[in-house]
Structures are given as structure tokens and as C-alpha cells.
Amino acid sequence: MPQIVVLTGAGISAESGVPTFRDADGLWEGHHVEDVATPEGFARDRSMVQRFYDERRAALLNVEPNPAHLALAELEQTMGEALLIVTQNIDDLHERAGSRNVIHMHGELLKALCQSCGSASTWDSTLLDEPACPLCGVHELRPDVVWFGEVPYEMDRITDALADATHFVSIGTSGAVYPAAGFVQHARRHGARTLELNLDPSEGSHFFHESRQGRAGDLVPVWTREMLWH
Ligand code: OAD
Image (cartoon, rainbow, N blue to C red; front, side, top):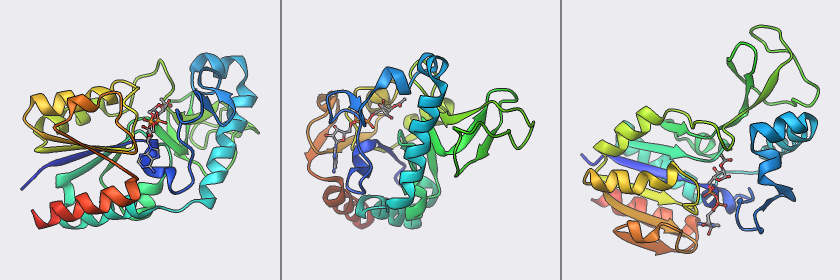
């Protein structure tokens, strides 16, 4: 039985209408990344950062999974836990498509992290109004997203899965941000067949055995069908 690790990035959600990061001159919906995706930016202007993520959380209501998310969910129905999705995305489109075995290494928009007690709570409303933590009652909630300078979630589980993988597939990511950008080399060192599916060659394209260029909505269903016939 193959063991597949799929790494996804912003490109897989692009066709759903969720903007990518690096396709607009390093600006993220008009903001500099260091202002809205670092602990320092949050300390500097808490309201601006809360508003920024509140808007993105609200925008999730207007997007739907696309054929790439759906094809991965369908593959999981056959493969079960032998398919692990590691996503850098903070949207919930993999889950809405039906995927269950998903690690959000950069956190989730639909969770709030309490800076006082450290607990993460499911969250679908705003944080700008500084609501109380449902567990400890302190008003110190922030988006449960991993910012630059912070350690991604579940790295031990991810590196173990990469070492056991027979196939590693990277979808819709520019390969600009570590540690995710290094997963291909880790998996390949441990014997995995490596494949990239991206609109254009990523920064780490040469690390993959094979690289296919195109839209995720077109490429992913083709690849999942190949795996099902395997
Ligand atoms: P990027 O915006 O860096 O890269 C998105 C990639 O998707 C680019 O290589 C695009 O060419 C490709 N792409 C765009 N549309 C596509 C489509 N329809 N089909 C396939 N590919 C498409 O986003 P990420 O690589 O996800 O981290 O960025 C990685 C991390 O940097 C993010 O998780 C975030 C960001 O700063 C944190 O916030 C910690």
C-alpha cells in the first residue's frame, strides 16, 4: 500500500477565490507580510491585525472547495490514513471537501488561541472586539495562525510521515517558506517518489523527480486518478 504525503499551499485554494501570498508583489491584500504575519506586527498594531484576520475569516463564507480539494478528499476515501494532507493554508477548504486526515501546520483561521491559558478554541466570529477566552475568561485571544518567527504545528508527526512516505506531492506552493519548502528533500532522502503540481515551477522545482505545470483544479484530479488506478 502506498503511503502518500501531500503538501498544499495557497495555489490549491486560488481557484476557489482565496488570494495567494506572492502573486502580488509581496503584498498580501495590500498589507506587508511583516505587519500582519509576525508577532512584532501584532504587538505594534493589534487592532489592524485582528481586523485583517476577521476579514479573511468572514471571506471564507463566500468560497467553496474546488475540484483539486474534492479530488484529494475522494482519494482519501479509498486510501484512508495512508493519505496525509499537510497544508500551509489556514482556510478550511480541505475539510469542507471531505478530507479528514489533515494537518494545518500554519494554524487555522477558524480557531482562536488564548495568549493567557494557551488553549485553542473553535472560532467563527470576530476577534477585533477582544472577546473572552471560553476556557479561562481572559480577553487575550489572537488568531490561531503561525506567524513568521513561530514554530509550525505538528512538526514531529510531519517528519515521521515524510520518512515513511512512498509518494510526496507538493501542490500550489511557491517553495519559498521553510520548513515546508524542505519537505521534498526529506521525503526523497527516505525513498519517496516526489512530484510537484504548480502553476509555474517553484523555487525548489529541481528537487522533485517530476514537475507538472498547470492549474491545481486540472492537475490534481488527473494525478489522483493515476493513484487510484495504481
Ligand atoms: P505562495 O503565494 O507563496 O505561492 C502560491 C503558489 O501557487 C505559486 O507558486 C503560484 O504559482 C501557485 N499557484 C497560483 N495559482 C495556482 C493554481 N490555480 N493552481 C496551482 N498553483 C497555483 O503561497 P504558499 O507557498 O502557500 O505562511 O506560501 C507559503 C507560506 O507563506 C504561507 O503558508 C504563509 C505565507 O507567508 C505563513 O503565514 C506563516
